[in-house]
Length: 313
Image (cartoon, rainbow, N blue to C red; front, side, top):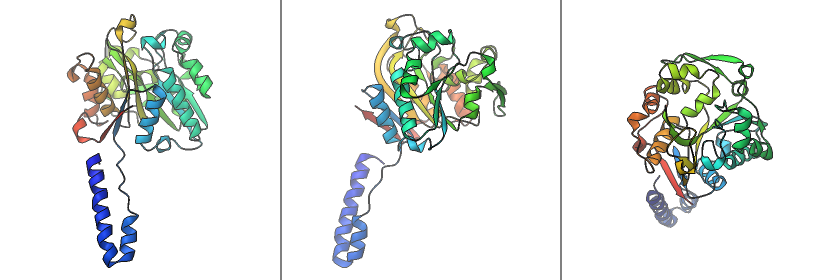
């Protein structure tokens, strides 16, 4: 509901209550207790704050973390920790955001919060340099490695996939009750854009297949796995707009202080791409996995037909 509609509805109800008071005291009392409730948005975009504050605003708008996880559940948080880079270089998800999200999950009653990524650089260096390992431990979460096949215990089927028909998935994700996808928004040489859909490459063991069998289609295909993230939260506190996915220097990074959250992974990446375009031009046609995701009925690229809430801090 738009703000003006919300206010108009309140005015109409107040007038209705006043008229009813003259004729029916009971009806007037009922009307006076009626409250217009703003619809929960399909997507939230928050700008201008620190990671913790933006997460608070986004979750509040979406009805709270309890809308996505329940007491006693084992939760996995999947950030991007692919590179041996410090937070300032924006190669990995912001550690402050991961810390804040772990605390939210534990406060909501999660029995365990596990964090992992199948890294590109040496995982020990990635976990340390990114600041995520220290952030996870300090927040009460558990961080585990993912760069050894023994940590991938089950091959899952992808019947809706076109190029990718199966994949080995990390055992922590197989065993989790729910998981939250927390990518960083950045440029990527192969996929053109690395965001929510692309972040799922870090849950699988054999990524070589992706690169030799239509990368864009495989990215869309892995997103068809039936155990979808309950929420996608895009970190764009800092954004690597060129030379991705690793980056070369701070010159590749823009400080944009933005966070996007949605249950719709295709809408999430579409909104993130539109935001990316404010810094550097990148056409939707170049990021083929987004439209492929829509074709696979994973979500929508039509942002005009969904409820979006924009929040400025």
